[in-house]
Amino acid sequence: MERKLARLFDVRRVIGGLFVVYGVIVTVIGFLDGPSELEKAQGVRINLWMGLGMLVLGLLMLLWLRLNPPAEPDRKESDQEG
Image 1 (cartoon, rainbow, N blue to C red):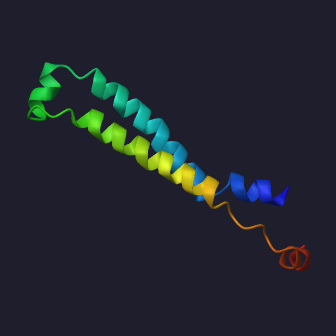
Image 2: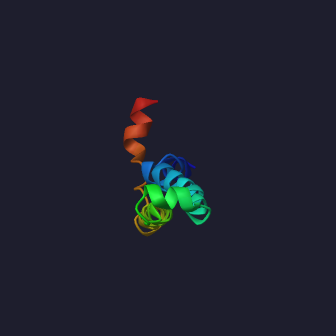
Image 3: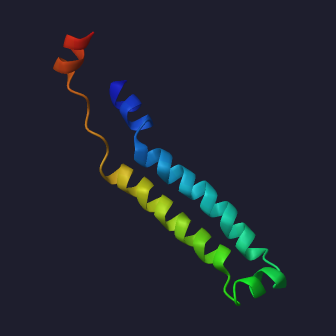
């Protein structure tokens, strides 16, 4: 149970999840950019590239969490506190 709670509140999960969600949103906006947005960005689909970058970063954070899960809390310390 403690291991599940430690994993649930790991910062990598929160940051990775937010980057994935925002990355999807910005990528979709990048696909829908019109000519005026492209003109402002000098022909570069900046929303598309930044969205893809955010997706990659978020997925790397979640992969890092999966490959290196948080250590289980020490039972001796938690027994002494409570």
